Image 1: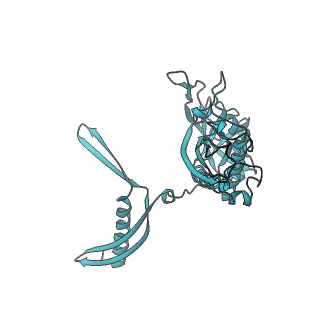
Image 2: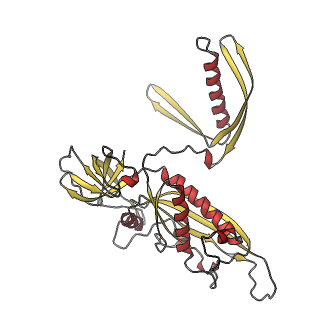
Image 3: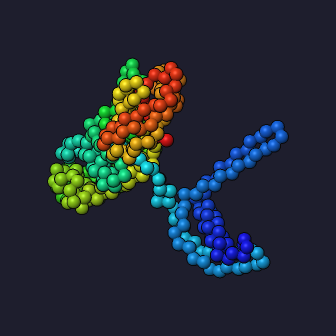
Length: 360
């Protein structure tokens, strides 16, 4: 205890006890050593995915100038324990179509355009959270093939991924896309004349990509099983309350809700980027504005990309190198665009439409 302050000592001891309890569950330890001619430096970092739920003080004991506190702590583990982001800006997420890896799993009698329906429903659910700007393009498929996802499609003789093209066209920073890895029905016996119970397994792998580079940032699998009436029919309408009360709608809707919550949490915490759309001297227009949370006086770093792409050993496009070239300040803000200016313009700097800025 410092200066005999029992209250302060109790608070400090409680905090340490709670932290140690969290570290005991789902702890990840990273250790490194730096060896120099005259010294060795060891660093250890402990991270935990658990968080405390209930804490009850059982006892405390004061011995001289030392306080001992005994707690009973309940822990939980899961995505809800992830620290909430404190981003001051609002990203825009584009949702593309979710194609089927095995298209024959959807029966000919079922509704067409499952890919488009998925994009529309996900966009609607994410929009309800009000943390992201959302758009969707259900007929866009940014991969080489469903089985090759998340490898992006790059047009022949080009270095720009389809994600970058979509991002520019929709003023989006990030793209949510995915693949139906399974949509098959079990128990389908067309020759039977009696009622039977079908089961449909729904497995969706979702990806979030950077809309500037096409790089895959995070991925996750979502699995549900529907039993009973599992056909994707025209009635009740997809998206209606009646549809989501049905056997297929309950399972499918639950998967979409989980994907929407996951995408919202991930994309809302990513940095805001913007594209230059016109240049006049040192003054430029960018494709983000007040709807993204930008204000006059905010600063952005100008990133430029090397012309040559980075290719793998097999010649596949891997990405492009970038570097910070200058800092720009926002001079005027409109709903969907802003006016920026580079005050200390570096000698030899060339700025053109399509160049990227990231908010500090």
